[in-house]
Image 1: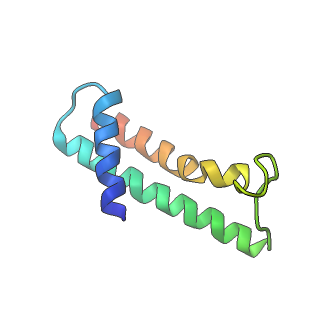
Image 2: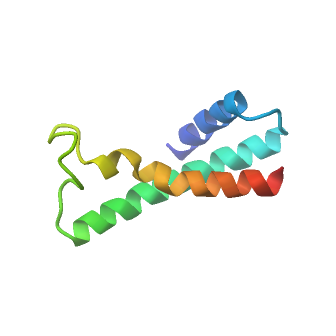
Image 3: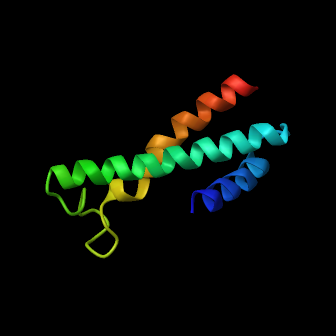
Length: 88
């Protein structure tokens, strides 16, 4: 599953970033995907520790909480930004 995340992230980075080396795209895709999975797991762990099913009711019960939608981004965006700045 992480490989699929990494490959899709590499393709997405190719679309939105200026031309970079394939190595940079692979590092961004792999590290960004790993950070996204890690962020999702950490957020789930915090919810279980707090005995909370959804982090908010903004989107309704069927869609889960608002943080459930962005927890992966909260972890992966800073990691990908830092790697992009370092590898530029």
